[in-house]
Length: 260
Image (cartoon, rainbow, N blue to C red; front, side, top):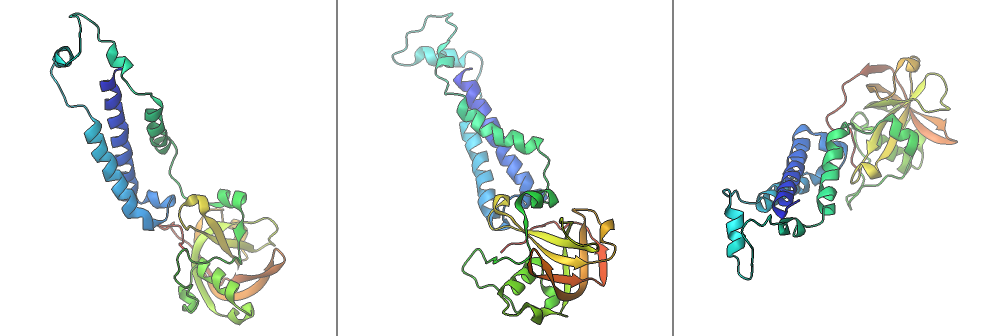
């Protein structure tokens, strides 16, 4: 492979990566993998890749121009009719090109989807965990009860000196269904993933829900649950539970994750 060919392939891969990132930003699927606060950095990276691709791409030239330029170069002694094998010798190793191409190929071949119940089966789920904000900003616990999401309720119970104080407060949350093993009939977990930086550090959080027809709900289906809060036992400790008096299926949100 000549150096010119290799540089053309490098430019193609870098341009492909830049366009791939821009498409993910535009479609919103990028936020199935990283925290949305990194949007500007990813946008700058995409633009930078496109700029590098333009810089690396060899300028077009007419037939025979390369031979003439090499023949006229100082210190070069080429015979006419030489096949110019030095082009292949001057090419850089291909591992760098493969390093750039692998993430692009994987991104195109692997379907984009957010984390769901399969990830919970591997990583577990928290119903009462000390989840703190990813920055120095204090955790807000004084929210109106119907404005709390799944993560807000988990935090509220975690920091409460007496979780029973929340008994009877109305809850209105949205999340996906997860049927954890060991739950009694008529209960499931309404769940979300909390993401600090990227999907690799995602933590599943969930609230127990009592709903007589819970067995009819499929894992990963998104629901809106309304009802008063109560305290139940799960995993040997007090855990928040919603005594659902209303439940409806909803479409998955464009941004399915919550951000501590």
